Amino acid sequence: MTTAPRGTSPVATAMAVLRCFSPEHPVLGVVEIAEEIGLHKSSVSRMMTTLEAEDLVEQDPLSKKYRLGLGLLSVAGSLLANLDVRRAALPVLTELTAATGETSSLVLWDRFAAVIVEQVPSANPIKHVTELGSRYSRVEDASVRVRLATLSDTERDEFFDAAPQSRAAYRRLAANDRDGVAVNNGDTTPDEVGVAAAVRDHRGRLIAAILLAVPAYRVDDDRLAQLCAACRAAADDLTRALGGTPEQRTA
Image 1 (cartoon, rainbow, N blue to C red):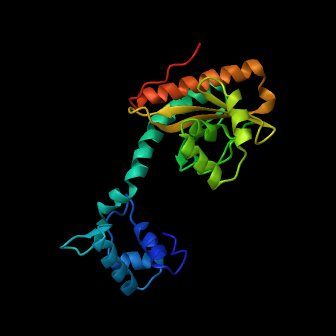
Image 2: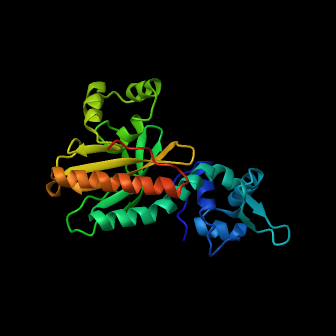
């Protein structure tokens, strides 16, 4: 059963209505929806009229029942584009985790914040995993520095103005990042090492990053170099899969 509206606002009611539709139940009537979410059918009928006007649902002229409308695609267009990145990333992440034995993730950006949208956890009993949707916004986070490295000075100033952080700390940490890879060597959590590399699309734009999260006790200098190389190679593979060309690296 679909969860009842989480509040009394029209938005909460609309979301509850839209969540009633599923692959198993693509066409529903007002009475069915009302029973599903626990609202009076007159309230649901008024909501359906509003949603239809916005092309979020459409009504069959014969049965008078509803299905989801194409207007949802205009709302979810940018999300669908990101889902393409997720689909392309999953086999790359799977291979990276198999090769390194460590948890790998795909990171997208919500303005300046890095957001975990896909993950393949390590099979090791001791590992670092993060819930999907987790956000990182500090200069110490490797994935955040991948983003900051591509910004103009003006855009970078906006980042520091929006969330007061140390420009000196950013410069110090960025100076230690390896070729094409940002490293968080216990800078946010002493027992974790993070390694992130940029993913670009066919236009050369930064669209994502691949992140490895590793318990610090398993990382020495040689191991860190291996993880950086593996993460960078995986990011380059995903870039190619998206029609892009990896950046040339220094020797």
